[in-house]
Image 1 (tube, rainbow, N blue to C red):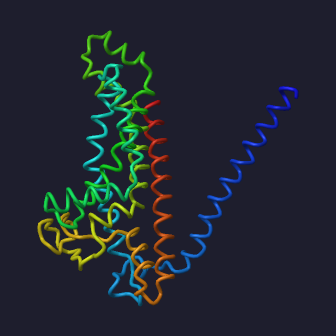
Image 2 (spheres, rainbow, N blue to C red; image 1 turned 90 degrees about the horizontal axis):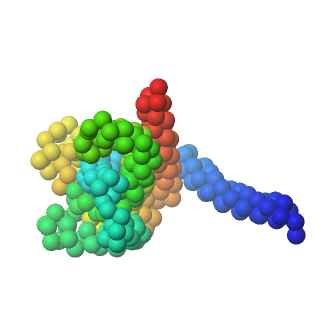
Image 3 (cartoon, rainbow, N blue to C red; image 1 turned 90 degrees about the vertical axis):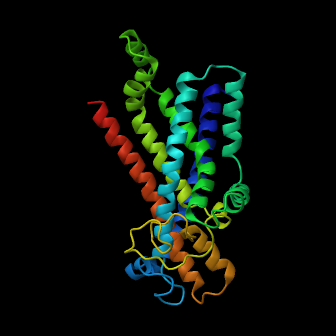
Length: 293
């Protein structure tokens, strides 16, 4: 067969398969949104489970999910950034560095339920954190760290090596070149990777069942003391997230309108993750545009 015909045939097969995958994903998203959005209302978003209809609202679960993402990013971003700087700028290219990157890859492929069990044994039982937001955040850090480290390292490696040579040629130290030249240039990619990873952990459930818990006690949104047991800022309180709430409502069978509550919660979850992705790309575009002026 002529090479041009083979090329056209291969291109057609690849485009067809890609179109099928895209169609399946879009159909799934459309189904979730179509079945869930009719059940979403302002009361559903701003009421607690005890104060709104049979299945309750998702105010507390939505806040818990967002707060958990913030706690996780506070812990994981500095660790991932330091690891990425070491691997990209300082680590020698030898067998030990290769083993370190292999360990990161293996850690990124761990099932979330395994990380949840590890978090339960270590953070909940061994460290005495009980079921809490902090234990959940530490478990999610284990899940998030490999992916965030790799995205930060890729962003740093995309900075042209000539910029590093220019800084070193002007007499700057390697650390100063890294912090004053490389990091600002890689900032759009780092921010994009961080927000995308935040969207991923926002929908995590399995790891949180064993660490953050499946209950959400009454929260006082007027109590700004993070050491108060009922404060919404207290990281040591148990907290049911939105993804765990969807699993719990469907698995227990105690809520009369479980289908409506789970469909509405799933729609809110999908929309929030989509917003994470859109915001990440928009912020990355704005920062890159500002730095390249």
